[in-house]
Length: 68
Image (cartoon, rainbow, N blue to C red; front, side, top):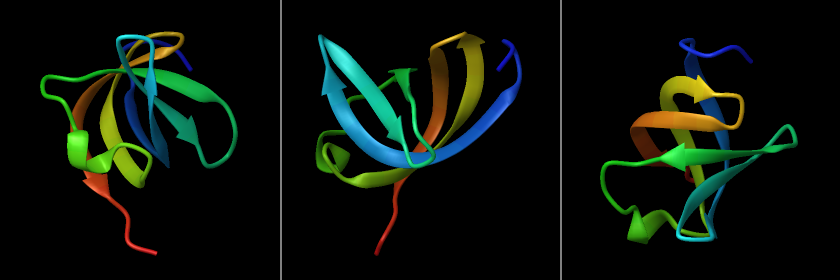
């Protein structure tokens, strides 16, 4: 996906190194640039909206839990 485009994705929020990543439902992983730490959502399914700022990095605007 090219940079500057809006992103909406769902998947599993995981810790990765010193930050977080989204293991996408459709496959693949993307690093997340977050303004605050989503402690309550780690290892849970979430919906992320934001902007693609690099090939593997999304600047997150919202992160919400997905109930199953």
